[in-house]
Image (cartoon, rainbow, N blue to C red; front, side):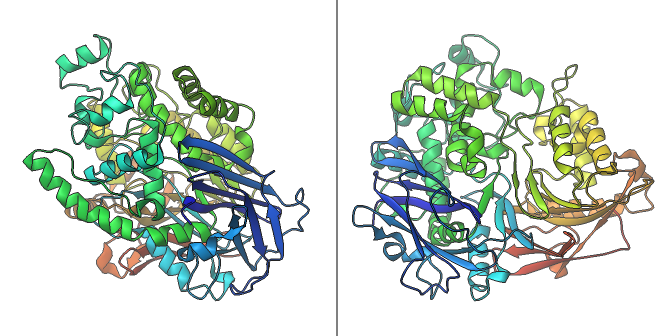
Length: 636
């Protein structure tokens, strides 16, 4: 069945609500078959739901639609789904209601005839990870999660409540040449919509795809800070220049069609089938790089059936970080003023945000987009004109509802640390706080009177002190963009407010913080000093899903951090964490690192009945597991 291009991705599963996402090549009749307490082999569905009243279709090209499915089971006359049991489902497509699971058996695990999931209101375990860069030469942590889940199909009690993707699900600013070539081939195959490029030297998307700088040299077209000044002046007419800071921007995605195609190519093997593309005209150095990247992209595509399967069989929640849009997105007030101040850079950022809404953001919280955002989406989809495109981007840049909560016990509070920044008014060139005072106050309201909570912050709240202090030094010299100086302690107001929230008597006694971003993994146990309340805090970082830190450099950072910030070191008193005791967990086996684990994979956390993490692992893409064991004798 060539109708389904990507998905289904299971976004929410509750006793009375199911939310799914998929992409199709044409509009078709759809129904959903549900199998209660399913063993994966039963032939007759318990319930079949026509989806006409519970779907929303958005045309993104001549032969491409996104389908958003949000089912209120009570309104459909369906009894609540049972908790704690395997539930099977199948999409029935077309007038003759063909089974997608039969046509796409790769969606099913061995011995099963359809995708299956479990509904749990008590949070007993989670998968989590960030930073999935397709052309990094490692295995894919999402494929590892699929193999891990395949080993546990016999008992749904072992299945995680959800898989949390905590940022950088795509790299819009860092794209391999073969991937960009595949993107353009897919745009042509699906007839994805063209667009006008306002404020650019090129008039429209067709001119961009045909220009000589399209591959590996897009940084000549993007705004520059210190180079290509003649081109900049011609490009922007002498106005102040926006700043794109990615070190790998030669293939930076620009158009909405490019970003949408990137999502499809990162999530589904179906769109790769029969996709033909040839190497563009390149010089010798670019050709060599293209060939090296082509082998990695081929391996990436080979693992996509597993990626598609795990997203169909597990509730998948997602939040953006910078690479979903562009490197250092909203890092400083100065960056924001310049980047949003010109129509072309504003369009590049806006296109990535539109694609995030359609492919990630909607499924987290469909209801919040109804009144303000979705009318702009439909207006753009119906007209495809430049004015509607700009209006949609303006709407999303003003939107303040990207954060969301998973309704479990303990609850999972997923933070927006990108669009509600605490700007420095007097020193806009220095890093902004990751959340402003208003956003932090709203967060505190969600935390009040809870016994335990899991917070998802894309960047770690408690990071590696040595690296944070290196970032402080570069910031002091006015170069925060050189070292990605993006941490919670970089802004005094945000840091002070956040730490006071942790100390508040009515906030949870157990905080688990899940993070990514940094391209290495670690786990800390944190306790408060000199406080009447004794909150327990766990900082658990898993990064990246398909990315790694430079190995030798991280080894040195790992050792130096232990030497310089041992418990007896006076340097501890020069950090904002002086009122907290931070104990690192030891990775076992120890050959993965002294305290920091460097390797692609997916994090796993199991919780006890009190909502405290009782097992913390990194499921490495090479099929090894790293257990973070508790240590009481050391502080970092």
